[in-house]
Amino acid sequence: MKNKPVKKVVVVGGGTAGWLAAASIAKLLGDNLQITLIESDEIGTIGVGEATIPTMLVLHHLLKINEQEFMSAVHGSFKLGISFENWGALGDKYIHSFGVTGKGCWAAGFHHFWLKARKLGLSGDYGNYCTELMAAKSDRFAVSVNNEKLNYAYHFDAGLYANFMRKIAEESNVRRLEGKIINVVTDEVSGFISAVRLDSGQRIEGDLFVDCSGFASLIIDKTLNTEYDDWSNWLPCDRAIAIQTSATSEPVPYTRSIAKDAGWQWRIPLQSRVGNGLVYCSSYITDADAESVLLSSVDGNALTKPRLIKFRTGQRKLHWNKNCIALGLAAGFVEPLESTSIHMVQKGIIRLLQMFPFDGIKVADKDEFNHQMREEFLFIRDFIVLHYHLTKRTDTNFWNHCRSMAIPETLRHRLELFRESGRIFEKDRDLFAENSWAQVMLGQGLMPAHYHPIVNMMADAELTFFLNNIESQAINRVTQLPKHQHFIDKYCKAIA
Image (tube, rainbow, N blue to C red; front, side, top):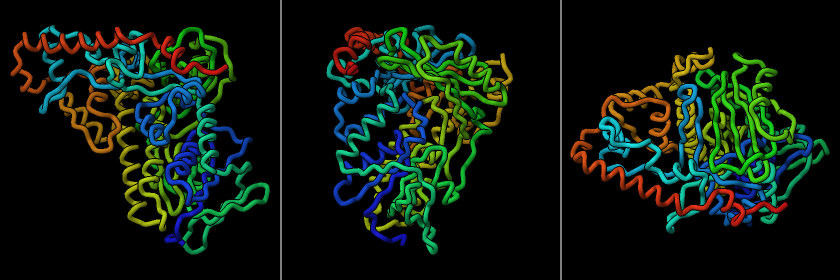
């Protein structure tokens, strides 16, 4: 059965992961496949992940999505980065922005030049040399300036996004079935999934099953018993409370992440409302107190009731097991501190499209898919742990734990390398490039003991000119951008 050609694809679960997968497979691989998506109106989706990163534009481009229509339909706003508040110490604030900061050379990144200038008192803030960061701070945005495209992502309503993708999927002949799955049928010899049965009695057969059933993990876990790597020893937060509120001001072009006593609060501005939530560790604060903390720190009127979400950070040891591929929450979960959830859904979809088993499932394809997905999840894990570990806060037991906890060896090595010499080496499949690591480490106060000596080949006066020129170029670009709200009104105002 495992070498049987794949002609019938069954997507289990809707939401962002399910409908994005169905739309992508149907539209990009198309006519020779029969694609069925099963979801139940009685089972809600998590749907709080409303912030994305620039990689999302890649799959949208492949799907030929009109950005203006999309942003209008999902009530979206634009995102140039994330503002981290109170993470290094109480009162600290920095922005991890998209785009490139400054200009490095073959031997050393820009931060080495900035580090020397800082020691000489010649430099401004590290972020002054990045157009996207300066635009975020100025509340300005456009998709491009001087014919150069900015690096940006989106904030959007996750429910509306799923509906938008559903329309694309159904236009590409995806069949939607309403109902709850009450039984999963497996082949007695191979253990492969052969069909699922609905509460209506209907049996749906398939050759490949895509598990987008969220934390329920109906097939990858409940049926195939795929093991899970638990990362809660490094990422202790295990719950979130989410609520939507009315907007009280114009949307800013960045996500806010505000560190609290036992976790952190997100604030994501859309055109007509704001997504809010508190991620926290239940060992340090009760659910009731966490809800009080969140409700006391949001603006506007509540549009929804507070919603409690329990989670366990980690990933499946196999993302592709037998003839099931898990996407989204079924595959793994890393808290949305850097808005990576939808990115990992997208990466799983693109890898599936690249390795699609038209002529049967091959062990080598499965192994490669699993290796790439596991590796990328691990890089993201380390980057998230970085934020917690680099805190200087001593005001609560939670932050004392985060600051002093053991960290993965892979992260420890990267920190020591930067601490001693300022070196950052980009690795294959690491989502976060050199500039991202530099922004977070510098933003949270980790200053290297040394910079690369090649920087000393630039005289002080030349270094000053070099930095001033980059900063003035960034300022010039930003001043040409309209205000974020003005751009939205002209470009993609939501239809009432």
